Amino acid sequence: MPLEVRPLAGESIEWDAFVRSTPSGSPFHLLAWKRAVEQSFGHRPHYLMAVGDHGIEGVLPLFEVRGLLGGRGLISVPYAVYGGICARPGPARQALLDHATGLAKRLGAAYVELRHRAGQELELPTKSLYVTFSRPISGDDEKNLADIPRKQRRMTRQGAKYGLRAEFGLQHLDDFYRVYARSVHQLGSPVFPRRLFGAMAQEFGKDCELLTIWKDGRMLAGVLTLLYEDQALPYYGGALKEAFGYAVNDFMYWELLCHVAHAGYRVFDFGRSREGTGPYNFKRHWGFEPQPLPYQYVLLEGGSIPNISPANPKMRLAVESPMTWTAR
Image (cartoon, rainbow, N blue to C red; front, side, top):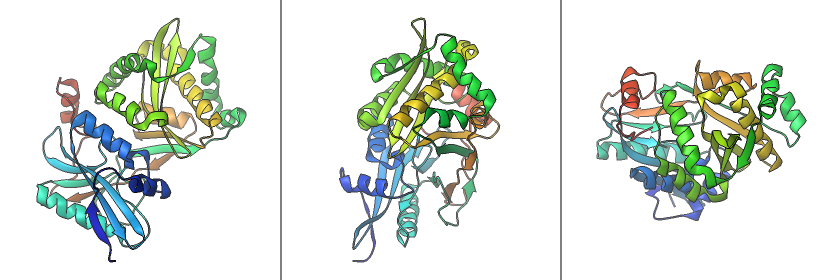
């Protein structure tokens, strides 16, 4: 039969199986992320499948989102660092793009945002605001330690000397959220609601882990990690400023790297950052090299690429206000 683009009907194990079978898939393409976003924010999903003679040839997860600064967009995928079209070589990629463009017009959306992790050979406006950091890891702690530059390598050992202790387990999710919210707001970034973290833990199950760092019975830092195929993605994290003198972040991420490496994961994905920021420099100091994130856009009616960077003064005011964030 000819290639047909159709909406996802209900839950489909074929969708997740397809995502996991393609190099451009990510945990944010999975239906677990769809359910977590729906439960947490109520955005309307538009999940598209390109289906041919041999089954699914491509998928495109989209959410209809009204941004904090106004305007409606179709985003793939909100609250995620990766998204966009996930397809096999062939016509599915263009078919999904054409269908998404038509859908955006019907909904009155100003743009379609595709958070591609790598280039998709699509002639579209591209924003290079972010880079991402990932690299292979070994099951050998000494080899992983040797991959960290000497100065930062020394910092990974400091935490133990200060009496820091690592603990894995989602039982501390409420305490972690308070640490996360305080630290992220101080950075000028949006603080997402507690229900998102609970939904992630529920929907991803064993593929969502929480690491918390303690000293003298007090939580100082934590990171919520998504596990996908052979990859570990520390996704939401934070640390109290007063703990920085204990090298708490170096200790925490070293403990996490060792933990996931021993569990058999072979890629450590440090996630996205804006160039020149503190998180960007931290990852560089760990020996990770930046890789461009080519987010691409379909702009309707002569619109422009939306500027939702925390560096945007309007966004700064929004982050500091008591308003609830609705898009990312």
